[in-house]
Length: 192
Image (tube, rainbow, N blue to C red; front, side, top):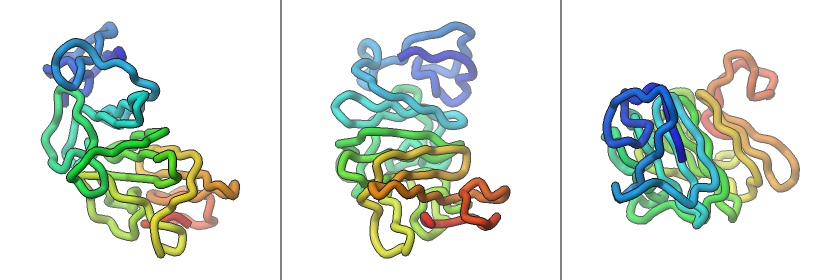
């Protein structure tokens, strides 16, 4: 993995906050060598996410809202492994990742959607606007349990979308211009 540009929060994974104008390799999480076996990457405003081939997720950079998913709010200059929804173990079995401005989203192979970080407009999809320092499962459209039938996800600045196994699309979060496609300009704190 290579990164370049602004590095004010350590988001380039070089162990410092020096800006780089040409690509540099992202350091490994154990600070020995470089990050490898990565199958997907995603960036937020000042944080990055890395999906490894083994289904684990690593994050780096700004963590003021808990968007790194490590159960604290300390910026990280080297990749760190994202916790699971208990904060006791690590997220695993992940097939896709996405970064919003200050939140993160992940899809597991068994159809669960996880979110964490900033939640001021409901972008975590859990029926509230409380920030989370580690992943939480996104609720269903009826807010009656966790989504367990997603096949694809997309994260954007303050909202997210998911495609479900029946082919429908659901969205949640910021919606001032109707970008969630629900016929309104109302924020959604859980999928509709």
